[in-house]
Image 1 (spheres, one colour):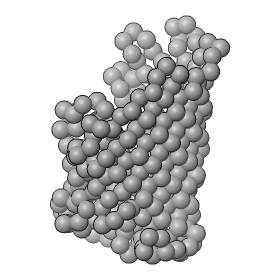
Image 2 (cartoon, rainbow, N blue to C red; image 1 turned 45 degrees about the vertical axis):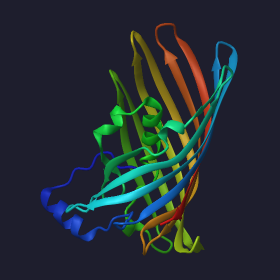
Image 3 (cartoon, rainbow, N blue to C red; image 1 turned 135 degrees about the horizontal axis):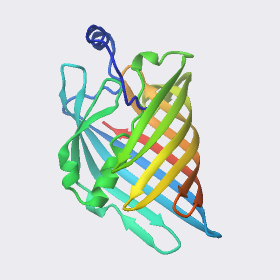
Length: 270
């Protein structure tokens, strides 16, 4: 749902920018409040033991337009109103989020809503706040506003590279969008867009002298309620199931992981 690499000729850039409309159209002087609810479950099989890890989060945030740029990009500010994150494993239960309340970060999105630049102040924040802000900054979906019309269908593919030190993980994702009709939601006249997602990941992580090889697949489905006139995502729900294997080449140990995650996003007011 994000496009990580796009190469265009200089003249094509000028033509495309003039015709394409921003997927998410925010107005200066308005705050857009979104509620994000997430639940997750992981089951790991390791050395004959089954380890269950669960998480639950409720986050309310405000999006504010700071500036519209000449290339059609938008400079945004994300502010956490409140956050509650509960993570539970066999050893402990952690409650996080208090430190993030009131914290904000500035960033830039392109025409389809992809985050293309994040203010460096994020790196100066505590780890808990970094994780929460980093996890929600790309919560809105990315697609071309022009693609959304009655009974439209389209597919988007992307290749995402995650680097951590000497490690690198490649993720190929294909997302199918199908517009199912219009529906009034929370006072907005929305298209209901059904989505299916399939992805494959492959790569390695390096932790000191230890290497971990990672492979995995994910399948997901959900829906997006999108107002095409106001160009706002009003509601979104996505459920993703995954299977992953972590292998340690040094001792040939394998850890299979199955996961389930449900994310709900709703525009509360603007």
